[in-house]
Structures are given as structure tokens and as C-alpha cells.
Length: 513
Ligand code: DHB
Image (cartoon, rainbow, N blue to C red; front, top):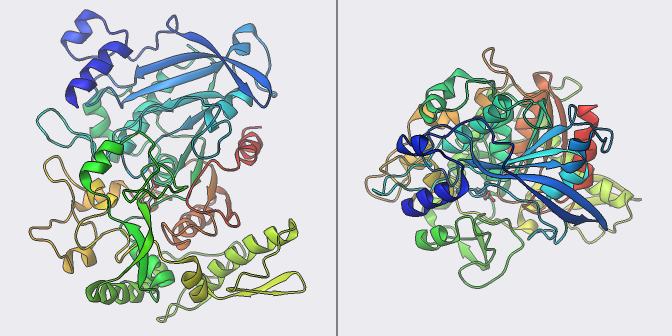
């Protein structure tokens, strides 16, 4: 792997001999080195300049991942206007390509995206007149030649921050407004996008950025778009059981480490048993066959479910009208009603758009109006994806366990409950500080941080990769701190992202103009 890294770096960057000697890369974008490319978008030609594989830190740990692709609509070099934007005003769309906390290579425009079959977010952004910066980032399986892990937490976020700094460092060298950087990501990438939006300029990441030779620039962003963010990892096991705790069969398939490695960054969607799933690359695989929770897992599920109200109440969340969103000891109360209302609004929207939802057993519909829902029935009918705990698995088998490994340890616990009930010998708990660096909720509202002013958060009504409570808590916290949040639950949508690109860019336009 290390050999590939070195080779990729050599091929992809215009490094001088002296820089090569010192494993140093220039942070100045070489604007003379580009290609002009053309793609079709809805029957129209989109012409753009491609500046690819630019290493965005002076001293990369893994240059194959710590590099980005930049795409600029060609019209901006002729002084033209696209979709109301100019070379000076065009927002910069910043999609990450992280899934499953795995390494992600710099993204490219595609006419036929693997998930949607249509133009991907990068090509769509170009058609809408955005400049695109698509960075790669290290992930939990990256290894150095000596076998030490090089991409465990918080590497993915440090890399994205370095990429933002690189864009500011190169301000004015290419079109694009560095005050209008809009991050986008899905799932683990949605969590990464949220982290980028929540931790702007925090001194906590400075030592990591210095070590990489990141540009000495700001790393806050203007807006954060987060599809189904798999976030608040150190608390997400509790709301998972709050919703799914009465369901004792699950469908997630443990993926052998070797296979996981093989699939890294290749976008394979087939599970080991051959079932093809319409799930993002690197999301945990789903099996057609249900498995039973063990006795111990059922016990831990109950422990986690019972702990959720105290955690939720400690956040002091409020609805838009000021209502305190709390839970009683049994897990009932205004927060539960709020979550139910999100599903009900989602269903109502679908009905108003002409969908017949009379077959959906967990909804109560009277005269075309959704009047109630049954959260317990929802969990039964939508089925449970993950075992318990959903994230900090007792046998250290989840991607999150691996994300919280260290240079020398592949996987660790990151919650007290996971550690307490662990089923494997010599299991370690990750450093508290590192766990904290990966949770956006620790940063929103802090004085020494610049939080993105604008947010768009989506979590599908059929998504069971994390509880809807998780993105709802993120949205509420941001809203309560005074940030502009557009949060919705698209009906019938499972775990995925970039499925509503016209709406995404309409939102981006609305916050940029
Ligand atoms: C992803 C999905 C998960 O269920 C998870 O726990 C982590 C990451 C993903 O699709 O990126």
C-alpha cells in the first residue's frame, strides 16, 4: 500500500526534485497544469477545467488520499456569468467522498453516478455554476509500510480542514469565492461534513494540522450539507435502542476485515453473500437473512435504552416555539412527540404529493391527514439493521470501533457501556480527547469556534443506520444556538445521499445569494 502511495504521489503531483528529497509539497496550486474536459448534463454540454490530484498539505502522511481535484466552469475564464454567478462570486462546493469511515479518494464528475444512475453532485454543481473542490481524506484502514495505522480518528477531519485551508491559501489563483465554501457528504461523510461545519478554526486540531504542514489559514466554512450523518458516535447507541430496543432480530452482516480492505474506495455494493444492495459504498453490508440478538446484547440494549432520557435531557434542547424537548424515565415526553412529528410530516408531505400510504401500518391517517404514528410499530416494520450496541460493538466489530483505533491498535471501544460489557480479551477504550474531537456537539456554541451559519440536514424515513434522534439532536442544537437549519425527513428514503440534487443546489443558491 505504501508503495502505491509513493507511486501515486509521484505520478500525480508536479513536485520538484528538492521537494521530493524532503517529502515536501508546494501549497501553491499550479494553475498552468490543467485539462479542459466536457461532459453532458441533461442534454447540455458542461465544459470545465480540471486540476487533479493536488496534494493539499506540505507533508502528507498519505499523498494518495491527502490530495484534491478542483473543477472550474470554463466560462469563468472568459468573464462569463453562469446561473447568476461570476468568477468572483461562484460558491465553492466541497464534497467529501468518505463512507463507512473508510479512506476516500478525491471525487470526480460523473455522468452516471453509481447510486442514482444520473449526473453526480460534482457534475451537477458545475452545471449550476459552482466551482468544485473534491478532496480525498484518510480513513480507518490506511496503513504505513510498517503496518501502523495512519488514518484513525481524527485524521479524516484534519484532512478536510487542511483542504479548506489550501483553498484559502490559493484564493485568487482560480475562480471561486472562499467565503462561500459549502461542504457536502453522506453518512460517515455526512458526519464529516457536520464536523467541518461545527469545528471551524478550533484550536483543538491545530497540532494535527501543523504536523501535516497544512496552510496557515482559516478552516471555517459557510454552509454544511449533511445526508444521514452517522454522528454523535459516543452517544448514538442509546437512541438506537430507544427506537429499536424491542426488536431483537437484525440484518447487518459483519464484513470480514480482509474484504473490507479490498473494497476500500472501490465503491462495491455487493455484500459477501452476493446480495446486491442499494446502499452507499462502504456502509455496513445488509444480509437478506435476519440474525437474533444474543442474551447479552438484549441485556445491553435495555441498559442503553434506559440511559437515553438522561443524556437527552442533559442537552436542554428546545423546539422552535420554545417547548423544552425532554423525556421522562420511560422515554416518553415532548422529545418523542417531536420525533414522531418528523415522521408524520414526512408522510403528510408524501400524501400531499399524491402518494397512497394507506398500507403503512404504523401511521394513522384520517381523511388524508396523518394524525398519529406508532414509533414501536415503526421499528418492527422498518426492521432493525444493527445489533446492540449499534456502534460500540461488544466484540469491536463495527467500523466505528475501527475508526477509534490507534496507530498500533485496529479497534477500540469508545463508550463506557461498550467497554463494560465487552466480549473480547484485551479490549481498550479510546482516548477521551480523541473521541471528543469527532463529535460536532462538543463544538457548537463554543466561543473559540466559528460554526457554519447555514445547514441542510436530511435523514430518510426508512433509514435505520442510526436513530432519527441523532440528526434531530444535531439540527436542534444548531437551531437553539441561532444557526440557520433546514432539516427534513424525505419519505421512503433509506440510507443514502445526493438523491435530491436540484433541491440541494436550490438551497445552496438561497443561502449564497
Ligand atoms: C456508514 C453507515 C453506517 O451504518 C455506519 O455505522 C457508518 C458509516 C456509511 O454509510 O458511511
